[in-house]
Image (cartoon, rainbow over all chains, first blue to last red; front, side, top):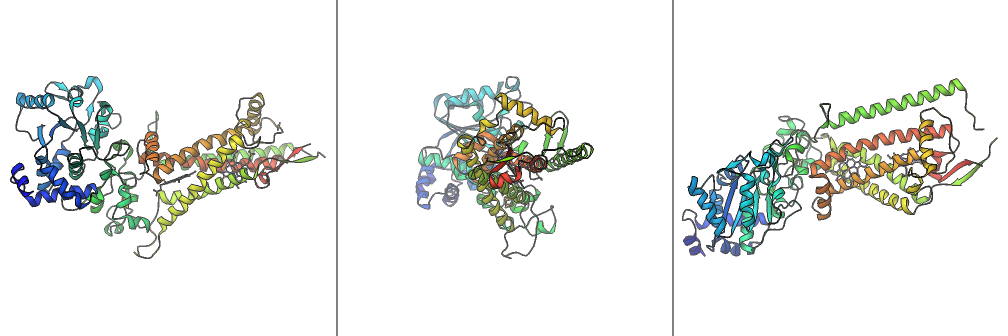
Length: 357
Length: 213
Ligand code: HEM
Ligand code: HEM
Ligand code: SF4
């Protein structure tokens, strides 16, 4: 096994690092360790799937987090079990040569398509153009030939921040445009590299895509809400809450529910898999979850430091906390009841008792 | 001296539904408020007190009672007695349309004319029907939050609300409808009880109303 690894893979990636990466992915996938040899075999088989990685409206944060994960082994493993034929950030080729590589793979080989970034659809898609073509055109050209599509990051999956109201460029996710291909959505801003690696390894080992939820997110990574496996959950159940950043409760590491943590509404494996190889994730360092793996997160999860969105009354410019409005409406109702009762009593006094008898 | 006749109006099942509904809503509003904005009671850890877990337990129990009440009401809308069926309050017959307007005039103190009618007046009936629809929304968003991993609820909830947060937001907003409804409802029951000798309040306990012979 060690030999196959060494002949087919980057010599910089040692066997130990390789096994470590595969084991991490297996753990994230929830597979038994008995599966690890199979996965190693699949990953080291030398049949590296060709991958085309398209960048549209995005910040490249997903790629950055993948490549700069402080598990260098993980990044290298990803780059070594796949053959990255086209990736604007890391490819050596440029200009016509890059375009040539792209078309060569698209036209002559089976490949996996990875999309990072949203696709603008307004004004014929002119808000994002690469090599003289709009993102929509590129996707329409490449997607039909792909064996499967992985949309990485919240932009490529659900439109991300570009799609926030009023969505000036008409940004949408891949699955809004491509209907007839298997699509895996790996949302997050950025998503955990392990979730991406797990999906690829699953595909290599079992020859099919992992089980997914209704939003096409792989269940191994997005099967549970953050709140349901958060390390601060005991403080939630026992009723100890941070009221304000920096207060005593915050220093004690209590639950961040009241300062707007969206863990109860967000599906992701962050508390289990964590980030950057130093075992941190937002809640562990004292910041609530902002719900970045959910559709429309920018519009529905804000204000980030409040529990619930605010009520916007269209046409009036009124933006207010839901409960303030509720209290006012209830107050008006109570006042109206008071007036109604007073009128009834007044009428009774003037006219004398109406008789049923 | 007018004479009155005691008439059977509400079945046992209907009265059971009413009190399951009313009590569960009060419980859901109170515990719902705590769930929305809990406070830190003690900073002693390991004190074996679980206020949030406890509030949620009471809350979910009331949630099931509420859902049970709605199932009963659905049944009664179709198979209940004459006053309980949905046709009795839909403004689709001349009798009901006339009652709708006369009730509005009476509630506005414009007319004193009280139409003798065993079941709900149509204005009340329509408000109850609207509340019934809102209740179904509460149940869908509630179970979507309670069982987010179950494919059925995930499918329905995602289709209706988009994500958990939006479901929760609407769930919270709609709570205010129930509080307004309860306030107006209890007031109008008392108002009617004062003005008319039907015994409307006792009818929801005993099932009987008193009508002119
Ligand atoms: C002290 C408290 C209450 C009393 C005395 C009371 C009494 C009554 C009475 C007399 C009726 C029949 C009215 C009619 O014929 O139109 C009724 C119906 C109803 N009540 Fe209450 N009620 C109370 C609390 C509540 C609360 C808190 C709620 C829920 C928020 C509620 C929800 C309803 C509904 C939905 C109906 C209509 C049933 C239907 O036809 O679907 N009640 N109530
Ligand atoms: C009239 C009926 C109801 C009212 C007034 C009500 C009210 C509330 C309120 C105020 C909240 C807190 C929302 C927030 O601010 O975060 C809440 C949460 C919730 N409700 Fe309801 N609700 C009702 C019915 C139901 C039903 C029938 C269910 C289903 C069992 C349900 C399940 C839930 C769940 C699961 C939560 C989230 C609790 C948590 O995650 O801690 N609700 N509800
Ligand atoms: S910090 Fe957030 S995810 Fe963790 S228990 Fe509190 S509300 Fe839930």
